[in-house]
Length: 142
Image 1: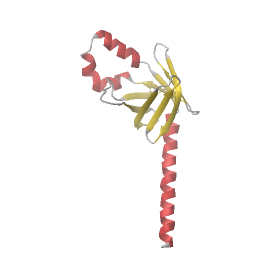
Image 2: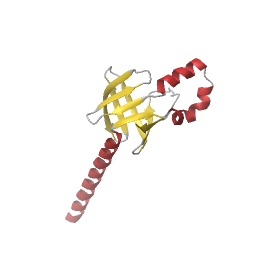
Image 3: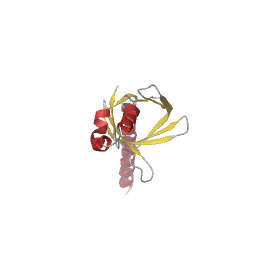
Image 4: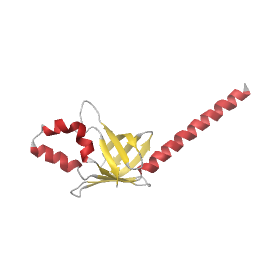
């Protein structure tokens, strides 16, 4: 009976340590600057975007194309659009979810769909019945 308790304690500690290691590896891979991959991101939404007016299409393109996001090791976050506009805030990682709080009080929650040394795929979590024009955001390490 005593050996079962030791075994359970050992398994619990091993699993707990493994989760922390995985989380730390994920956080380490996120650190740096990522460039939005517009072509890959709009691939599944292309039909929908093509049906929009030219003016709206250009507005979407200017909001996404050339976008860079930076996750700093100290918890700072920065997003820079092609036209130079910036959004700053703080970020934290919880499981496979990134929570970003902007300095203006906004909150953005992004689910990590894929992460490697040079590819990041994020799925924004939204409330209610809203649909995003671009449901998955593809980034490459810059």
